[in-house]
Image (cartoon, rainbow, N blue to C red; front, side):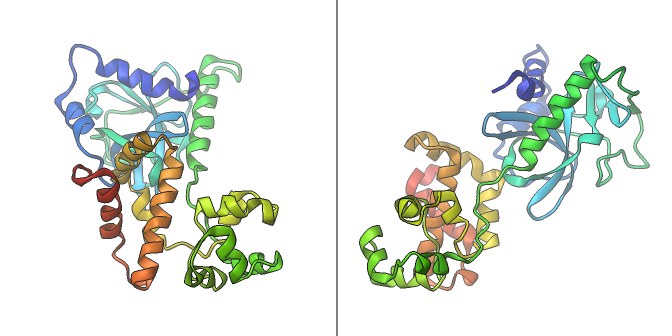
Amino acid sequence: MSQASSSAYERLRAAAAQLHVPDAVRTAAAAAPGDPRPGQIWRAVWEGVVEVVAVAAVDDTTVHALPVSLETRFYDPDTVLLPAEASTLEQPLALWCGLGSRLPWYVLDRQVSELSVPLEADGSPAPDASGYRYGSPLPSPASQAAEFRSALADTMEVLATARWAPRGSGGLPALLRQCGLGPTELIHRLSIKPPRALALLRAQTPLTPPEARLLAPTLGMSADAILAANPPLPDRLVHELSRPARREQIRRLAHLTGTAEREVRWQALFATLTLAARQERPAEADWPARVDRYFHVHLGPESE
């Protein structure tokens, strides 16, 4: 983890390590993550990058978030400087409104605080907000403030472009047939039963990551490229595994199995989807209940 990408969170930890830790911060840190809401401050984490962000607006799959800094010496003209009483952190904060980005839900790791200053959907203070001020222009492109801003911008770019679920173009059947892989070849190469081989060739079920790795040498493609040719995945299932509440389960299972979080998400997604396809039409599946069942099997009753 680079110093630049983790600086905001490390400063937040340092503030929390002071003698007085607000009760609201303790409560937020100890609580199981819920779905994001406007006005909350979250820790965002993705593949070694860490940032603290304020949520200005929420939709079904993303949040509009602003990087938050406890380092209030640095700012630009679009930075909102808040007094200590403006959040449950009880520390002065800088909201970098000009670096606001749409972040996917799944980069949100844990809520750490709540703002008392209402924000507009674009991150600017609401008309009825008070007690804040805007920063001034950067002294120069080579100033510490400019370097600080650049590091925040890079971190937000990483978080905004984070992806874990293949989008699914639906081109898998044509790809398999172009390479001469019919039912018999798939049964042999993947050690699967005939109904699954036929379902793959009819775009009724996706290849799993292990299966994609097995076919990669034959198809002359990376496993990720093959997975991208899968049938489109159910949006509601992808979203269920993207919720912050699921991340703790994913992280625990990753620790138990010695695999990366991304791999655990994939395994959970494809295992849940494959089982649902055998039992019912995926469009009618109760995805939250099925994901609950998956983690119950792999983590035990304490996962609920």
